[in-house]
Length: 130
Image 1: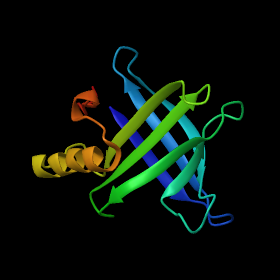
Image 2 (image 1 turned 45 degrees about the vertical axis):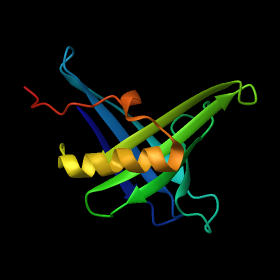
Image 3 (image 1 turned 180 degrees about the vertical axis):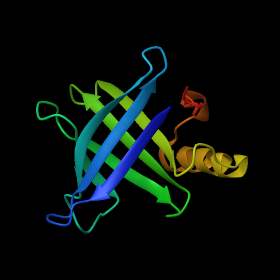
């Protein structure tokens, strides 16, 4: 199980980000908190997210959202001037499951916008916690 919570900080417009994951073997939650900022107000869908002071902020882009059920988020990391490159993409939902037609639409959008193959995705299961 994985959860993300977001809350707006009124003082500076940044967003507090808390990601947490349930470890079934240890039977406990692990979490990490960070801060998201919009470096360019002209491009509000591009965010910098920082979780640790010693790790550079990650570049996250909201590719699409319906503001009610889900958002599609993408990040790309490269090292040594692009010699090594990793792509990350998430379907963020407000509920543990989504209708199949929304998932299909999300994959189509990822393929169209960033040429990301659906076979590369790993499903996160949301199971009841004992």
